[in-house]
Length: 381
Image (cartoon, rainbow, N blue to C red):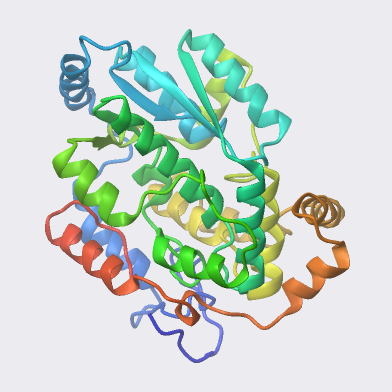
């Protein structure tokens, strides 16, 4: 993927994606390729207003059968956010499964996330396992990524979370991993230049250049490992229950609040102070990217938010500027650098994953094959 030359600003006439996605294209009516991909590859096979309980029950039967001799018939990642919390409810109360709630502590969760996790686990009466990532290794990898100058600063956390979850499932012979990923909120993928994907080769090269300690215990799981080895040889299956139910995020949040005392966050992923800073400050300030655009565009196409409502939200800052300053100072201190050093790192020339060794050609090929097989239907350019 080569970043294109800057061009005159244009916003889609249907959603709110715009030319901060340098690869975006528009038709004669000003409708972007994200919307056209939705119309062609997603909308014909997905009705956001229809519950598919019969199909969900068939999946649940397979999960229950596979895990009938185990303590848990599935495992699900629980972050305390709306998607994973509602997923836990669907797994236990709708699918009647025996899930293990899997929590990965990367050192950045806010108290509200911890409290939400506790409320969901206690309210549903399910067991929980917590994996605490070695902080010194996490800090070293995150600081390496900042020094690399690329946009994808959430890679160290995201990779640790999913790797830990998948590795645990395979190690303990749990065949089904439930994920909160869903078409209602995630069928518009953030552009690759905004948030680069699961490229372990790139991460290793960045850490080799900027890291100071070996990553002896940091959990890893490259794309071939979980897409091929785990899926076809270890028979690990990922299931997306939220795609089988009507998932209006605002209504789900209200339900979770009323039933379990769950607390809503300002934006998606804001249960984590690092991700809040990364999405609310680092990306907009350093690169001009606002991840709310693809989140809101999802909601527009799903019919849960109007374009006018989305534009009004985007006219406001991602989060309180004073809180951003406090978050920056807190993150700098936790990473072991001064705020001035952090400012200098952020102000350094922007880089892309293609300034480092990477596996984008393989990732792109894999997604292309998955799209041909009907496994993947989101855009990647």
